[in-house]
Length: 188
Image 1 (cartoon, one colour):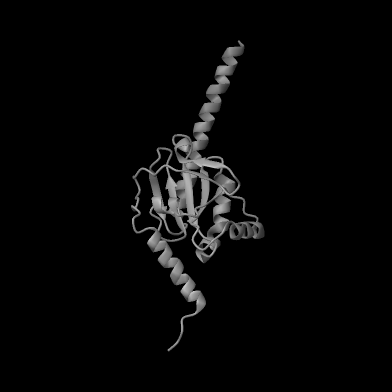
Image 2 (cartoon, rainbow, N blue to C red):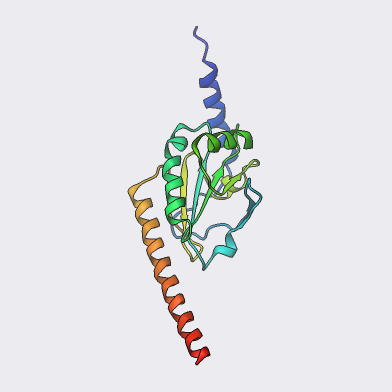
């Protein structure tokens, strides 16, 4: 009888851990209100979803350093953050299963990644959002509702982010025009 390899057993344990973690998780779909959360990034910054509501859309990416698909998508995530980070709140959420902040730091240092990242050590966020595998992408609109969710980066994900960025830029432009007009009136 052949014995299972150590890597196969590790993958099986991780998969079972994710399934066990989320047995009671409610699967959220597009249109559902995203559960509120407050978390601290590994850089010490506070993220509060309810404070972003009405201000910016949010892009959550659930991932792990041991997930090959996650790592393959990271350059894409970094480019989204670099290009749209002013218009959309991008937050990488490491699911915390069989992972560590040291592993995250090593991955980021080796590749030059600079993203707001939450280490979900206890799996609370992962569970609240009904995430059952990695990678997992969730887009939350300015209204606080889930607009889109997917397992892999897709064209639809990119199109939604681009559309939101364009809307945000238009809104910012209108606010700047109004502010400028008010300042001009005040100085007359």
